Image (cartoon, rainbow, N blue to C red; front, side):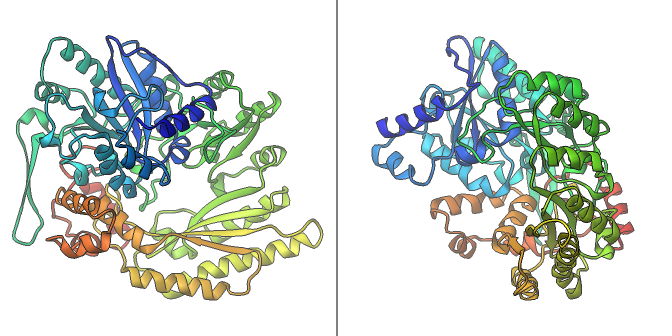
Length: 559
C-alpha cells in the first residue's frame, strides 16, 4: 500500500469529528461508497446518515470509501495499491458488501472505476463466492436501476434506513450458516424495497423496444418501494463534521422529505411521496449532539414546513445561525426572511423554472409573475441583496420568446432592485442557474423526448446575447452534452450497461464509445415513446402508475 495515499487518508480522518471505528470480528462488513470525491461525498446527507444508522447495529461494521481525487489516481496505479476504506485502510475486496450511494447518473462510470481499482470483477456474473456483494441505493437506483443491472447484485428501491439493516442482518445470519450468495439473494427479495435484477429478464422486439420483462418466479414481482412512516425515528444529518468539504463548518438537517407540489417535471415529488416533515423537537435534540452552531436546513422547499417560523425562531434563541436551500415565493414569510438576515445569509434561491406563466402552468408549477417579483422585492427589502434563480431550457412546447424571457426576467428584477437600492444599499448579484430539461422516469413527462443538444446550445447563446452588457447579472449553465448523457442513463434499459463498459474501457471517451456501440443512443434520448410502450422501469413499483401519469400528461396538453 502506498504510504502517500495512507497518509492522506489519515489526515482526512484527523480533521473529522464523529467518525466510527469498530473491530470487524463477528460482524458483516460494509464499505459504503460514494462514487465521487471525498469533498463532494461528505456533503451528501443520505450517505452520511446511512453510515450512522448502519454503525448503530452491533453486528454491522460500516466504513467509507470515495472515488480517488484525480491527482491521486496515478499513485494508485503506480504502486498497485488496491482501493481501501478510509477508517481502517482495509482493501475493498475484503469486505462482505460494497454499497454505492447513487445520487447522480453522471457518476455511473465512477462506479465501474471504483470496482476496477478494488480488484472486483465488474459484472455480477463474473464474481465468485469470495467476492463482495455489490449493492446500490439512492434516488438514481430506484428511479431506473436498469443501466447498472449487470454490475449491481442488489438494489434498494426507496428509503434504505430500515431496509438496508434488514438485508445485512439476513446476510449475517446466512453467512453464519455457511449459505451461498445465490441463496442469500433469493431470500433477500422477501424484504420490501429489495430488487435483484438477476431474477428478471428482458426481451426486445425488432424495433428495439422492450417486448417483455419476465420474472424467474412469481415471488419476485413486482419489487416495491419502501418508505418511512415516521421520519422522526430516523434523523438525517451530517453526523460526521469535517472542514474538508463544500459545506464544511455547517450542520445540515433534513427537515422534510417529498414535496406536496407534484410538479410534472419533478422526480422527487413523485417517488418520495407522501410529503413528510420532521418535528422541531426531534431536530433540536439532534442538533445538541453536534458542536457546530451554523445550521443548514435541507428539503425540496423548507418554507413548506408547517412549523418553519417557530423552529427558526427557536434556533436563533438557542444561539444557532441558519441557512436555507431553495424557497418557494408563495410560502415565503417575512419572519423566515428576518431569521435568515439575522443569521447573515446573503443569498436566497428561488426556482421559477420557466420565465413565462404559460410554461410554469404546463409544468404544474403554481407561480405567477407577480408572486416571483413580490418575493424578490420582499427579500431585498428585508436585507438580502443576492438572488439566485433556477431555470430550465428545452421544456415541452417551449417557444423562442419564452427562452429570451429568462433574460428579461433577470433584467426586470435588476431594475426593481435598482429603484429600491437608491434609498437603501448597493445592488447585489443576480445569478441565473440554467439547466437542460431531462424527462425523468415516474413523471408525467417520462414519455417525452430530450431536446437536440445543438438547439439547447442555441438557446443558451440567445440568453447570453440578451444579457450582454447587463451588469450584476451572472449566468451559469450546465453543458447540454452532459445533460444528454444524463437523459441516456436515466431513461435507458439494460443494454446501456454495455455502453458504460465501453466508456470505462476507453478511459471516459464517450464520443468514441457512441461511435462503436451497436445501438444509437438517440433511440433512448431523442425518441418520444408511445403510451403503450413498456418502459425500462415499468416492472418496478416505485412511483405512480402509468394511468395516473398519462392523465396528467393529457391535462398538460401533451398527450
